[in-house]
Image (cartoon, rainbow, N blue to C red; front, top):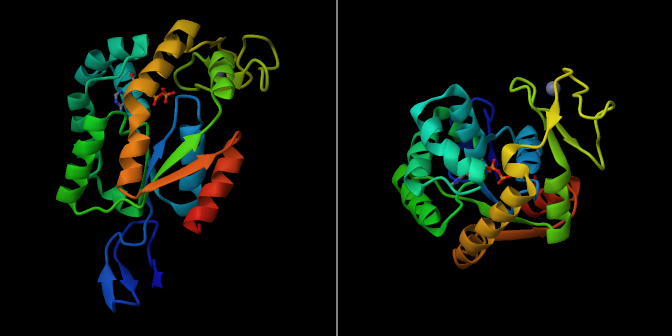
Length: 242
Ligand code: ADP
Ligand code: ZN
């Protein structure tokens, strides 16, 4: 049994079994796997609120870079619009830096990374180099028809400072096409047209789904079947005793 004395600022804690101070050992280090629309982002936000770890979303980092017009953003933009994966080398450059930021000592949830077998292999090497041990790779397994329906009906506020999410079926804005919060237009994301969605799902099946087998072999896989984010959270909390 160990007591984390400062989970919040990520400093050393005292391990009462080993009678020594230890860094990082009882913080949660997870990978979230799952198709686009499985709810990785929602689940990540809920879990970080519970245990004080940080969410690292390569999609968010990339969208931020595109908006800011950085070199990285310029390189990534075309791939993202089409629903293609950004090259592994760009992603590994981002992650190599990100995982060495001090806040990662609070534990982390990787959301949307790794996305390919080469990324997973490079991550294994990177973590060994940084002396970090993963706890689990959690696969959020949501039925395909639910995913498709969710992505096709998702709408986003086009104001980049707001980006509120709506759903035309389950959570429409009060006034059609207008954001409740800021009054801007509510639109379909550029990679959430039917064409880009089916491309993203095909890319997922071809390139990302094999990671389930990869982490199963490593003995790290936790598969959670669920149709709502709350059910996923409950299952993960139970499995990981959070
Ligand atoms: P979703 O999970 O809904 O597809 P993300 O926000 O995770 O959305 O990713 C959006 C886009 O960013 C992807 O379609 C892809 O172009 C790019 N991207 C994000 N993460 C990665 C990654 N690990 N490897 C390659 N491309 C990525
Ligand atoms: Zn808005």
